[in-house]
Image: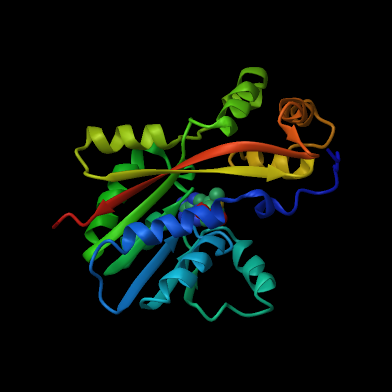
Length: 262
Ligand SMILES: C[S@@+](CC[C@H](N)C(=O)[O-])C[C@H]1O[C@@H](n2cnc3c(N)ncnc32)[C@H](O)[C@@H]1O
């Protein structure tokens, strides 16, 4: 393992989910009848990695109209860098806004709504209201896909280990898919759940740190190099190293939710 403390870049390179996850969502979506032209909105899009993969698969069957929303002030700049100075062709519009605000202000008729790895950033008390609003904006046979990390899987055990050891981690507001499912059940919202699993590989410590840091907005915004937290992450990773890479299993759960009228 190369202990590279320089910067926290290249986070995406370890996430195998960008192959497994988009294909599974597209497969679930295609079990239903949809018009030739479909409207897609990605809420909390990040740098469009998931949306681009999904569009690649969906555009073989439909004319897609994709919109992305993200409230981070850095994302648009990062997208422009990633796609060589302009928005990619598959994207109709990018809106830098808070999801809840956007949904309140805009009426949609969406065939596909994506909310992937975003609920952790939204207060638990707002989840159900948001889901109901989104259900109301689904077209006939339209589907809302909420993706959340499960506590099952090795990723979580590394994480839990850290939580036991490190005070900063106790402050986290992270909620995993189990909490989300409980909220759906308690409010009687119907859903269809599918798990996807994959092996994540990181080949240096910076990438591993990023795997945790993106969920845990530490006061400093970073996990400081050489800090105890950094060392604990490295320690937890030690016994997961295979051929110089650190590998561990993830399980994401996909909740497919239909319109209120179906
Ligand atoms: C972990 S990333 C997930 C990116 C992408 N959906 C994926 O699955 O790869 C979470 C993204 O949600 C955005 N986000 C978090 N809370 C948000 C909010 N309330 N409104 C809009 N975007 C939000 C963050 O800026 C970040 O880009």
